[in-house]
Length: 370
Ligand code: HEM
Image (cartoon, rainbow, N blue to C red; front, side, top):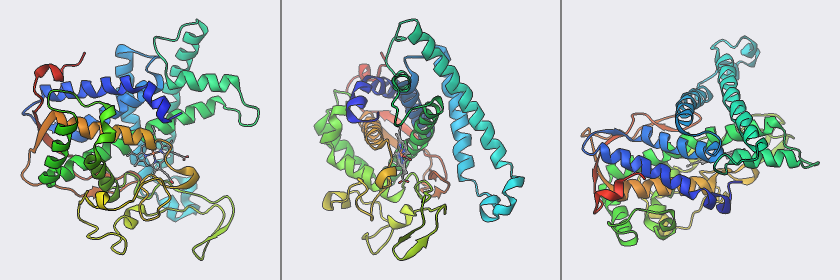
């Protein structure tokens, strides 16, 4: 469902959302912009329009986006909150911090939004139209109706898949872009090199297209280095063996919750030279990739549960960075840049990156949103 071929079908959608952001930033030229917030909005709009863009439109979509942003933020905050019940399982029933209760409330809100989307899509399909465009929801409902006796897809599966994509794809992608921009602002020579590469490949009289991405090896190395230093899910997602097993000489009992500290592995001095330094060129010299086969570098996890959205994440992070760097020069609002991290299930910047854009393309028309 998130294969390259499917992503190609939805390219126009991503292009439009990014152009909308560029146009907004052009209007903010010379003024401070909260980069994380802008990226979150862009990624959220891309993902929700892929999910049900053909189902809801206009004002309804905008208000739904705002509602979603708030519920996703609450859910990721709750996922990362230390929970006394994890340390004293006997107390779990009391839900002393009210985390389970708040989680339940978020789940209800999501369910309400998804159910109304599903109803609308079913109504459109019944009336014989396609609602003005294809979307994932239409695709999922078709899969559900066609049925597969071995692995049937239920309505609950449809809801869970929608939730996975919204929660799994938004914060991870936008935080990665925010860290990348912050690291490059801290090392202006890296930003200059990335911009020079874009000038050669794209040129100042053109907009960046996704087709340019494969021709930007330096920017690709920047993305890989950011995912090394600031992996969006520093402990991956909790795993749980269905049978007791032995890994590296340690017995992992059935049902145990296992966290893999990829953040620490990515900073291990026995693997990485100057591990705390932001040095994209190490990825031009070395051969690490994030396919999950190399246990010294796996920001998307590994094995059967590897991130389902790797191809989409790659396109969105690369397209965001290329667009931001090619369309604008960036300077900091404050003299000092704070690169510290805030740990949770999702890794965030402790202090938001606030930066000032200056347009750098050759013509104002390149900033227009059609
Ligand atoms: C820079 C961006 C992203 C990073 C760093 C990232 C990283 C990860 C990681 C580490 C996992 C857990 C893998 C494991 O435990 O072995 C995961 C799971 C997942 N990701 Fe991503 N992700 C990103 C973007 C996305 C996007 C854009 C989507 C889809 C729209 C997505 C969908 C998912 C889903 C559905 C899962 C659960 C897979 C499963 O449990 O089978 N992710 N991601």
